[in-house]
Length: 305
Image 1: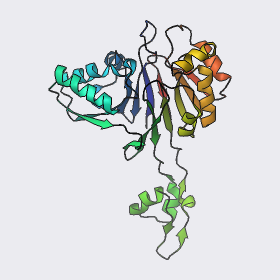
Image 2 (image 1 turned 180 degrees about the horizontal axis):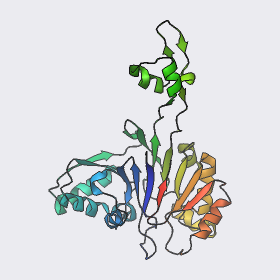
Image 3 (image 1 turned 180 degrees about the vertical axis):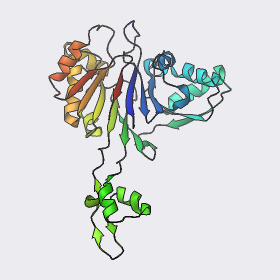
Image 4 (image 1 turned 90 degrees about the vertical axis):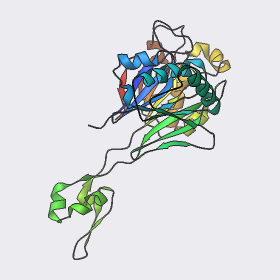
């Protein structure tokens, strides 16, 4: 069965608490793992959630604040002890690549796998283009340079109507072409419309990661049409001025972005240490967004399909 799942390893903000870990998520796309941000404790959370280091081959870092980055040297060092092999690509701003190279050269010079540094640049939107999905980047509006990420399935193939395919004696060699949307031409030259031979494919699914950022409608424009949005909600609305001055958002503002973007579902996270109860975040976001709302919590596995 196809899988497109978000694993929440950490959803707290800058200061770790007994309630929340620093920011980290792992996307499981058909048993292929991709990490977004890597706060301290990420490798322990991977073990708790039974996510295999050997399946992790891409790591995306949104910005260079410690709660999103400082778990990475430890994670890569641990992976080096496991004879992982292959390669791990770290998608990161140039300064982050420079820092990480120096750290790894001091503490873990020899690794059993290749570390590839893919530099995120403003002019380059698509970071990864695979057979069945893409990963894109877009700017966020924080106190330091920051980016978000969109994980997007490519359009899926249509489903074959077996009865009609047999009726028109479609050869096996033409099946993939027909699943891609082409009509079928019979031996006597008749054109059989694709709609007669197939049924529609499941819609492609997309996921946007927006953390950390002040409220900005340009974010909604960049993620317009995405199905599920994770948007930081460091504060509640009574701290809106503090959120703005620190380059963060409130739960209500996260809901506004999801509404403007036309999303179906909103995941909240990056909570300030001042909050224990997550219910008010959902209640506040519901005032500005009518879709499904999830308050992220450590250990959650959220299915996107």
